[in-house]
Image (cartoon, rainbow, N blue to C red; front, side, top):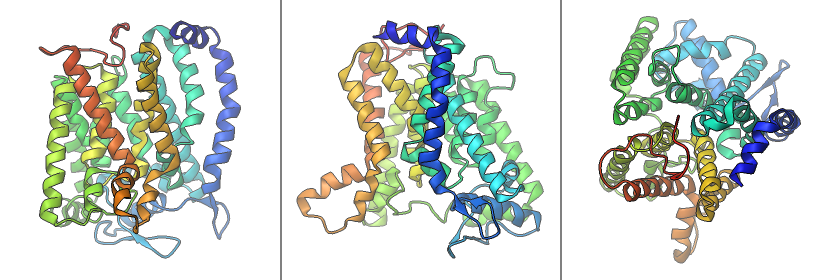
Length: 417
């Protein structure tokens, strides 16, 4: 099976790339275009975060405060700007052009980020297929990712999450990058706080130089944020607190450990205690695992860990399912593991069927409460299971000492090379 797939992607890579073009076009037409809405003045727009980005950039340019004020939406609602003030700078690329142009620029950047992520994972994980084989795999898989809720909802809201994921993947997996490794993670963290957790990726893999570069870059970018908008920066960092307006939100689509626990309606002290205990366990597992698996696995685990421990991880943040599922699928094929393949199927089904909508049904029989919680918090449950299973497998395979570049998905496969 593995040999046939290798032959397919290396010998017929041109055919696969050509075939992927109409598949991508169909996926865009079917899954993305329905989210475009006609603007009153002509053109198109998407709702949600993209409007917040545009509002924040224009408010900053006009001298307003992006932290104290909230962005008015087209439907009459208001939403907060929850990113650091530095974030307005990279988002000007999408916010300054006309809305229609900005939306399509964001979509193009998101597609490029997913494609690059798939390509880099394949190149790192299975180097024997070469650049052409990696291109073929990325081209074929890309259309399918648009059918997953974390991906298409990111497009639907015009979010920048997939672009940030692309920056992180490039920083972690590109061999001998032309930039100082860690710089892209620092920029991503200064734009949106969650990528700062990838400092753990560098620390636990003992790449201390990249860790230092990440911190320095993040600090410099944050200081730039103070320079361009001192008032908003003071409010964001010292008065209100980062993303305080949405931390631990009980909305069903907040697929994080804190979001899950918050929906149980417990006393705040108990709620925070459970969240802290779970996060501590997950941190210990990550510490014991990240340094003993190859970089692609470590990167995917860190991405999933970040979403789990963050107070707020909307379902559209879960783009890390894409590289994680690809790695797991490759491991299933290599090891001929039905269990791994079944887990991939469950992840894909969960990412397609939007299981958290089940939580909207409040009047469920007591016997069905646990199944409802397991299914409705599927992103959280599956990710915890995946993280724990990976940690357990690493401990079982290499019980003593730190083993660098161990591939838990392919115990008998080629090493990195």
